[in-house]
Length: 340
Image (cartoon, rainbow, N blue to C red; front, top):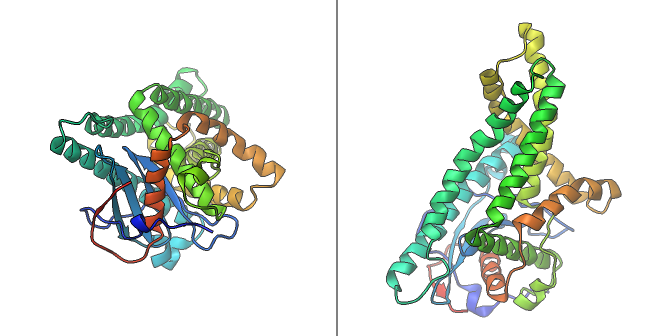
């Protein structure tokens, strides 16, 4: 059964108010408490059904944890919990919490650097990394949506909706994989990917009801079928079919294929629908993960995680464990740092 480190049981909350929650928690293997998470700067965010917690390693060696109670809007309002709609809502929650936790981890690292300048810190460039990440995300919207459309238009397949979106989809997936690979070459992002691996291993240990210790978590795989990386890949593939249908309907109604800018606007507006369907596909794959067909379909996402995750060290696993243990707690408690 899972061990709760007594030193971490009462850890939580440093600054900040409750915010919409990211992550895509979903039941696995019948566990009563589904969890999800993501890597942040020098740390990990974990989300349970009723709580979100982010743990960050300080230059002093302490682990500081920011936690708050939160229930997804998909559970608060019945209609938002309907299939596909819940995927759209979850996608928005993921985005908001991802930005907020990343900014919080960068702020903690910056304040820690200011108060301990005499100590060299592996997170000395954390603030610059957070800014570069935000810029990269914004630029990514244009890169992954407009560029594939422009390439397809340039190749002269605009009048054939299926061919157009097959080409655009292939370009989009190629750009995404190349983008992740380029990020993996950065030493700063390599550490983020190590924490990503720590997050996966810790969740895998929890789902297997194994002890939540660094030694125990280290024995589990860093590849997880419910990873956000896999979710994005599913979105990219589903977009080919959804956009082909939308372009065909547009041409049928108007009598002509949409222009480049109209396609861009139409496809971006349909992104919530695509993300909603992708979310349902991810949930289905979780329930049927042992089926040969499902295993074959999720394999590309697991392969991609060879780029977006790295093997974590014991100290990074301690951070992930601290975040998960706090996420499994109940209620709001005063903030504190935890020695580790």
